[in-house]
Image (cartoon, rainbow, N blue to C red; front, side):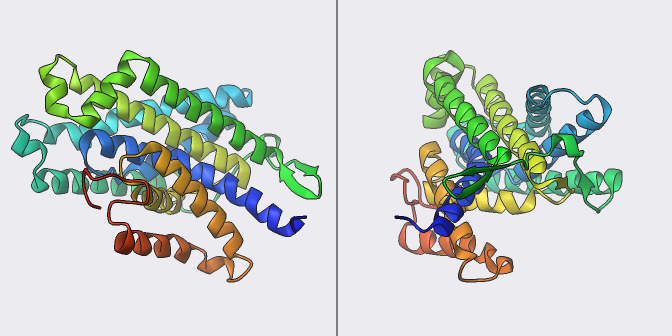
Length: 304
């Protein structure tokens, strides 16, 4: 028999890990296609949460409609992010420019600058204090299953995550857009030579990744009961660690690593105070960089 408390921590960790996984997929998709890290992805998460709150307070639609609208807002945010922070650095199409370190660093700094601007705009627009979610939309109804305490939020996060991850796999392996994304991720110059519209594939990557991040933001807001302008920083750091653990461009690796990270953080609270649990992610990052320089689930394309 498993200890009920330990089982409870595992369930909590899996819910947390699924949120990290949805954010990590956005990192992984963009890195796989452009070979750069999108440091503005945490702000997409935050914008999704605030878009959902504005919709709830102004229209009060059903939860499913809230998730659909937030996904659309995330897609628009991803499109704007790609146009502003990434497209200006793709003027040159030769192999040397595409693979140059200067191009990566410029794009990284561009996305970081845009993330700071977005965070400050949200801070000015909504203030730095917590924004409370209306009671009727909170996903905090308790559900007892064999001594393990769940909430409807756990089930919503689990169900929505499974649906979105399954939809992502179907899109990547069963649609022309998904095949184009995979081709560009494998070899952007080769994809160009065989007639694939690489610009469209790159934009589609940002749309899909940002949709997942935005939906994760509103689901966490409904589960926690409040949101704030800096809420995306923590999940973005954990998702980045999951991406590195997963091998930078492996979506299954990022998902598995995110689940491991979420469970480890949840279980660690039995041994250390909750304020120290963030060190778990940094510990995983250091161990990965030292002992698995290509990631736990990575391959020989490139070292972290």
